[in-house]
Length: 315
Ligand code: ARG
Image (cartoon, rainbow, N blue to C red; front, side):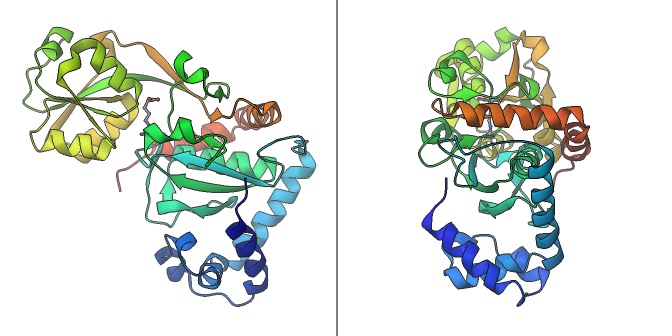
C-alpha cells in the first residue's frame, strides 16, 4: 500500500541524495512523515548515502536471486508493505533510540525496533518492497489490516477467532502467557489469581482472554503493556498477564520490584506468533511464507533471534 506522500518523498529523496546531513540529524528525525515533505526527504536521505546505495543494490540482488512475483498481489504490487505493530512489547517491538538501521524500512513511526521489526525488514528486502512501520494500539491492528495497514507483525498469537478476520503466516515463534508480580507477592497458583483484586492486561490480547477466564471481574484492561507494568510497579495492580519473553524483558527492567512466574505453573497453553494479513491476498501470503522459509533455511532467522531476543538488553 502506498500513500501519495510516500511517492512524493521517494521522488524528493532521489533528488536530495547528494545533499546529505549528518547522521545525528537522522537520529533526531523520528516523525518524518508529519514534517514538511522536503524536510523529511532531506532527513531520510541523510541516513548514510552508502547505506542507501547498498540497500538498493541488495534489494535488486535479492529480487534476482529469489522469484517473488508480486504483480498479482492486491496490497503489495505497488512495492510497499505497511506493517502495523504496537511498540511496547520488548524484545519483539519497542521504541528504540533510532540508531538501528533497517535497509528496507523507509518510514518508521516512533523508531520502532526489535525482532519483529528486523524480521519484517528482512522480508521486505527479500520481496523487494519498501517497508513502512505504523505504531498503533494493539486492539486496532486486526481491524486495520487491508485498509490502513497491509499486515500486522507484533507478537500476535494465531487464534481461531482472529483467523476469521485475517490470514496468518506460518508460525514464527512459540510463546506462552506468564504472570508478572511484585517481588513480595504471595500469588503462586491459579487459585491465588482468583483472589486478586486487580489483574492488568493489554486490551485485545490473549493475556486478556486468559485473565478473564480465571478472574473476569478483576481484569484491568489498558492500551499498552508499558501502562500495565507501571500500574503493577506502582501498586495499583496485583498481577499482570503477559507473554513470557516480553514479561522477562519487563522483569529485567524493574528487577528490584518485579518477579515473573512461568505460565506452566498456571497450566497456560502454548501459543504461536504469526504475521497477520488480509484474507483477500493469497499472493502476499505465499510470498511472506516463502521469505520466512528462506530466512529460516539460510540461517538469517536464527541470527535475528540471537541479535534481538537472546541478546536483548533493556534500553
Ligand atoms: N501474543 C499476545 C496476543 O496475540 C500479545 C501480543 C501483544 N503484542 C504487542 N505488540 N503488544 O494477543
